[in-house]
Amino acid sequence: MSDFIPPAMDQMRKNYSLGGLHEKDAKRDPLVQFHCWFEEALEDVPSWFEPNAMTLSTSDSGGEITSRIVLLKGVEEKKFLFYTNYDSTKGSQMRANPRVSLCLFWPHCQRQVRIQGLVDKVSRDMSEKYFHSRPRDSQLGAHVSQQSATIESREALEASLAELKARYPEGSKIPLPENWGGYAVTPMSFEFWQGRPSRLHDRLVYQRERADSSEWTIKRLSP
Ligand SMILES: Cc1cc2nc3c(=O)[nH]c(=O)nc-3n(C[C@H](O)[C@H](O)[C@H](O)COP(=O)(O)O)c2cc1C
Image (cartoon, rainbow, N blue to C red):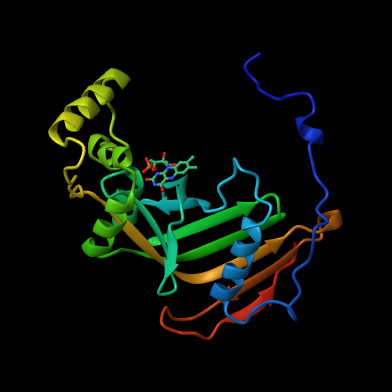
């Protein structure tokens, strides 16, 4: 009995009927379209849901792919920002291969946005600013966590935190760790997906040839 298939799983499905996405309504600039959908995702959002949570997929030079959730922390200069540990699994994969994919799912809107792009580190200055805007405990957490490395135990982690709290008493400045900071994804393609009845969903794909081009082609994909 090692299989996990709840009896009704194969019958779990929803019909999507909240809206549609038509070419005549879609913005010419996908960043504007993203902005509109993000604003709408903030309306009537359940309190437990984080609309800026996105799946980040990365791969190494051997083609090994990994995915995880990170939080979108802004769209600046037309780039999608998130923060993490540069020595983590994702950090070393992005060093090996700067091509990444982002995916946001807004279930209360029956919408998904996929973004493919090229990733770069943000400036140290920008990381500094964001790091010091975080709650103090999160700043300490970034120091304590050797993200993605194997550790001995939970207790060892908490002991490191206690040590660090003593080293940086309330009111003192916690420095930005060398291996922690932001990444910016320059989008090369977007897909906006709106669930529709009978699985006949709307899918509009925006693509451009070069990262500095503002000429986007828009195509409809079969659901
Ligand atoms: C809702 C949510 C938000 C998260 N946000 C971040 C984030 O912004 N940055 C980050 O490094 N990890 C974040 N994580 C943890 C990652 O999913 C992941 O466990 C961690 O980054 C290690 O990934 P890696 O070993 O593939 O590098 C978040 C997880 C969840 C569930």
